[in-house]
Amino acid sequence: MDTGDQEVRTSDNGTEFPPVKKREIFGWCCFDFANSAFTTVIITVIYAAYFQKVVAGGDSRAEGWWGTALSLSQLLVIFAAPLVGAIADVTARKKALLLVTVLVCSLGTMALALVGEGEVWLALGLIVVANVAFSTGENLCGAFLPELSTSETAGRISGYGWSVGYFGGLLSLVLALVVIGGEGGAARVPWTFVITGAFFLLASLPTFLLMRERARPLALAAGESYLHRAWGQLATMRRDLPRHRRLAVFFVAMTVFLSGLTAVIAFAALFAINEIGMTQEQVIGLFIVLQLAGVAGAWGFGLWQDRAGPKPALSGALVLWIVVCAWAGFCRTAGEFYAIGVLAGIAMGALQSAARAVVSTLTPEGRQGEFFGYWGFFAKLAAMVGPLSFGWMISHFGYRAAIFANAGYFLVGLLILLPLSLRPAKA
Image (cartoon, rainbow, N blue to C red; front, side, top):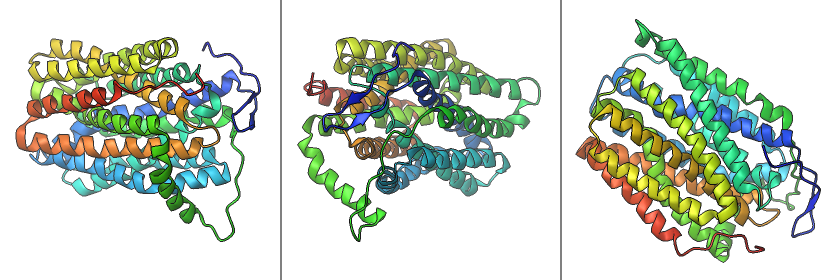
């Protein structure tokens, strides 16, 4: 990692941050490595198809149910995020709260192995619980980035995190392929859920061992509770965020294009199986290729962002996504879909890394927990809209109509982004 140990630096409001060690950045990146197993195996590649084919028994409403469960989990995160953010800021215990989310998500993931045929509501309930914990953990992990980076290194460090994350997703898929490969592999699929939960728990340990809690505790006002402070932050967001116009407009663009991205994450494997006719093993192979491409996208676009600025990197990623959606709508063969997967992996890594880094560089000093709470709010709003709209569009109009419509999210996000300056004010 070419970030180097950072010296003591002073924020705009006079607060001194202790030096950041390379091992802390490595520990922060390890969380992306760990939690990628959940999104890759459970949300995208294996459990989505297992739910449709086995748990729901091929019911035509399965995609709609799946999208609704993912959207409901994000709605719950939206309501909980201000309270979690308030507790994190006041107590300066982001790391302890992060550990709680890891434990809940890991155990919920393992419990999916106990769900049998026809137990649709149990499966969806566990998915909601695990995904709420996962998404809350994403918010808390993102709130560490401003403490570990500067405006000059945020894109690079965020890119490192996403790149390492794709290696985590890659390893989890390889483990799944080993478990279910060969004769009788379908009967062993539930074991992949147990392995994924354990992977998340064990692989996140370096985060808690190496990363420091750098924030300082804050005092609640007399008579103020965490809940009061949380709802006060929502009122502050409505009043204060418009004053940070560039960040506010960026959050609008981010909500739109992440709606498209979360839809792809939730339904890409189902599209490959139901429309392209790929087998489960072929889909796992496809996503192994996609993970490798994602590493290149996150790392390469992160360097590009630090050198050329965030707008070219984000715009390039969005153009790639428009091409991916349009091409996928016409795709008929597995070989062609593999090529699309390479482009999608590059675009996915680039878009996720660049968006997180932009929020970091535009966040006012001393308000990291608050503004990454806003980031989480809008990211979760997108994760609620995207799968819900895509899932029920599939149920009513089919996969290809849904994928063409999904390109519109990336196009509208690009149009909002183009007139906006994304460089930090001090630059």
